[in-house]
Length: 464
Image (tube, rainbow, N blue to C red; front, side, top):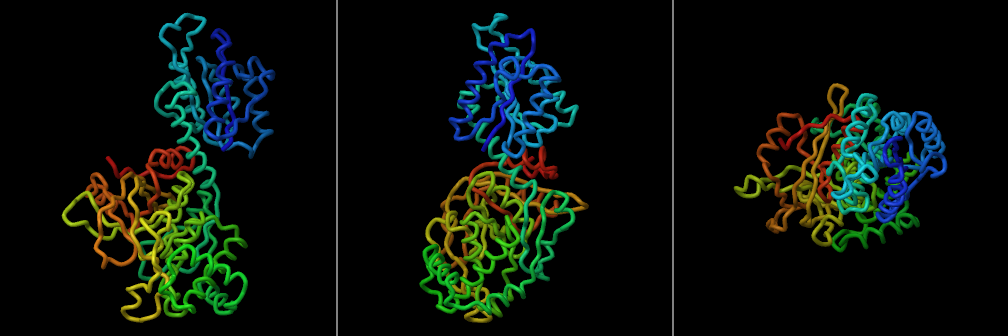
């Protein structure tokens, strides 16, 4: 990420402290693997902003770098002037992190005392009045070279990735909603207001393209090799394996032509009855390639999957709230037929015939990637549209390594969720679906900050 750095000033405070702050903050940002964009130190006194005129100068400089930076770090080495800060950043258009220096015991004389603890409130208050969105984190004051600020910076970078990636993106909807699943309905116009552009494709077109694609085409043969390296295809008949490869190639064509950033796919039952395959493993593969994909035309799940993928940099999954785990009220089996990314599984998956389809129509469901979900700390989230608003929840839990009997088909894992029964009540009463989406690591704060402060989503609190 690239961060524009802003340093504030105030005439009667010890401005020489700003020079040290520039050095500290640049080092903090670059040591974390990011880039720092800094106004020339000769543009103003110490390159900091105090007056409205200096704020306008900084705004002009920032405008000249529009599109280059992902966020702004507003550094308060001292009790800074809030009016200059407002003039400088009111049109920044990206997340803004408020950072204030701590005072040190033994350095409380006028030459060294910073008063940034108090000054931070002055800036946040005025930004609130001007409706300039900003981010504040614990601790209230923090040195840029401290471990605490390193964690702040890690979280802020994740917030910036989510905001940048979610502010405007294209979501491909391949196939219509299955009639039986009214639970996954959504309002396309509402999503457009949030910058989420939906591109819809009729499944019959995909089927036509697949049926008219040669088995020996270079693209198909290359995809077969990639899929065989990805999962265990030893049980899959050659014809069905080639069909899966063709579907994968066609989906890639849609992605390229329409610049899709995420996908939701109608996965049953036309692909099974007409093409004799089940696309679970293709969804798994897409997610491991970094292209967020949900199944069952659950487009809203793709939204939260994308957000968590941006925050964590790792694959995400759409799962069913499927089974209780014995009599443990804080554990649940989260499951889907086989679209879980291989990187989220405890071991390499095995591509099998989907047992639900095989029961009534043998040979129709090759493509379910079976296995078990690995144990890891996770975040779970989902959303829906209602009355022109996008409503979303996020909470944190973990997958355990507890066993699920061998006969349990598909890909499942045991999730341990504190207060699960209370959370389930709120989800049921709140209108959320039978799916949730999961991502690697605890990132509730990152998601809620991005969603509520910068993207305008309505947060539904299921934890309290």
